[in-house]
Image (tube, rainbow, N blue to C red):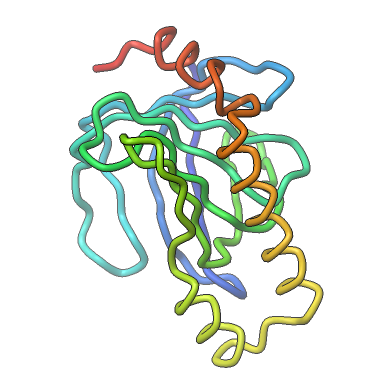
Length: 167
């Protein structure tokens, strides 16, 4: 497995989530990464901390989201981060997080999170209308994919979990 740095930013270009992952492989859904349960993450200027549950991440090509698939998270089975299309710079993946998240809970419920933060940031940071529109559209697409169980949210995510070391 090859190391990858996840460089999540907040609009317009401020540090958000930073952590390392391992590249598992690639398929028609995108690049798949693995972050074990001892991964050290850092959000903005906060102190680094260790995650409690491991996960795999799919980084699709040309979508306004990336998704994390958990095997032992107490609340979520899938967490979709809505943001600008991911950009690769060698072994570094960068995405601008646009506040909204879509989750599938362990009981199968699909929810949109952080709508209040998205509304606040539109005004506070002056999100351009096109950015707002693309974010809302990507959120609706993610909800639809999760509700319908469309890949990679049916069995493919679990296949990559099974392929990962799950340490």
